[in-house]
Length: 389
Image (cartoon, rainbow, N blue to C red; front, side):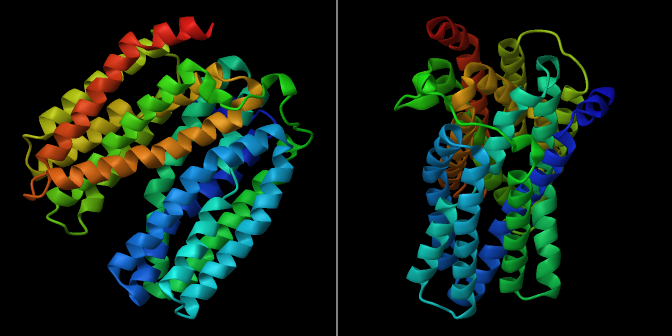
């Protein structure tokens, strides 16, 4: 763990990490708290629509927010969006408390999604500027592991709050945590003096003009497609009961453990080779899981997490390396957007594959996605690197 201790001694890293961690925890709290609050007043169908509106607005606006942060001072963009985001939180909460029409609630969810401050992309875009190159894999591994850990802790915190306070109050607490986290990121001394991009790095397509960035984003879509399939497979394996959380928690736990282990030392082989090995292993685990019973399937989820935990770290390193400094925040904003898209497509496809209540079809679809990523990494990454250079 010496690498992590050394990383945290770099000025600004500890404070920035703690600040963005608050922001990310609130994001993972948000889905559960809003789902419960809207379901209690409007029903399941309406709650699903509200969450979908937020997700679509957030993913569509994400790259635009990232480009603004690249082209202008990131701190100013964060603070401006945070002010409007706070108003959107207040409007959404008021709609819940007054049982406003569902259309009004959808408008509030859309406003909330559009104004999300890009704290995560800003921090990921900052790592190459404040962390020495040889420590970047450790920084991204730490970032990825903490991000994954929030998907374990966030719902647990929200679920605990829901046991003791009304659902709208849990939504209010979630909003407060989000505002405080993003404010701490914006006021971090590390952002002081950070300027926008130069005219030389501007372009209509931004980082999407780079073939290697497009390829990496496509691979991320396939990865999150697989995670969407696994979410549905977990529900099917648990026969629709709440015990589905055991499977997803097992996956997240494996990913956190292997992600931290990956950043704690150097590993042989190029990033492309590592991606091929990891995704091939993931495909084999998932294909085998299709034949497993409930207990062995939970083990397969843990093993899959252990195998693929380092993937997000590798993807972040490659995105940061492939993107010019003046476009990194937008590039990482695209990462978050395509993750939402891939996950949504995965859950939709898997939902049709588990109509009989068996998780095997969703697991096989996820395995195919992992195998395709391995193939793309093996054949496509070298060509795009050559064309970009």
